[in-house]
Length: 268
Image 1 (cartoon, rainbow, N blue to C red):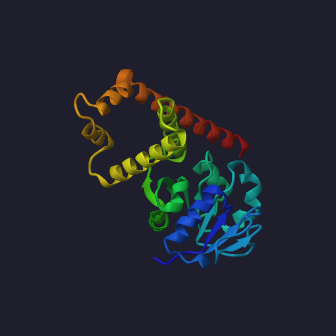
Image 2: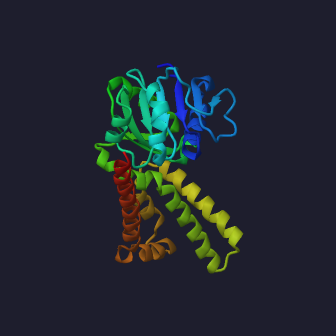
Image 3: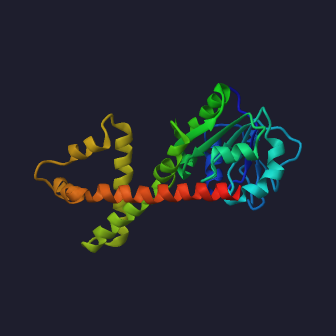
């Protein structure tokens, strides 16, 4: 399948990360047009416009602006989205019904939830859509260079995937920061604690990704009976304290995502 002509409406943090991931995978920069009034410069070979190009045809249109801007974007974008266009959206809280009502001529619509690791080809990506076999295959082709993409069984799972995959990196960063802070409180110089905590998490994630064992199994393999790791795990596991903290964290993020969806419906 050849690279389609792709129009990005917005190329901020997330849209820019996806573009970087595509280019790093070897896709032709000339396939991409970016419409963004604020972007100072586009990567070499990528066309940068300040507004969507009237009268042109694109195989794929990616909505990558702020969700609350959808109403103002529709008049200039909707004419570019026809039966031969796959519409991709990373607009948090904007559901398929809203997208279908705003872009009724789209050949297919897919909601995506990636994160910034798309630039490195390491993003989890949740996908849900109203799309035929050809559009589904094209979506999978485009997501493959960006990370691990999985179709969800229903749109009702998107809020939780937003919490886990979209917001999750921030939770991991906070854990790295907290591990380092704890080590500093117990006696390590803070800059050294920061470096060691980051290296530990990087190595642990790489090992988990390469291992056939689950994360839980790997934890048990590290923990010898009566050893130092077991002593620490006993603290984390007591009264399910870490499990309850993670559930509460994901629940709060998921519920806010659902609230944003309701707000977007009201605006539409």
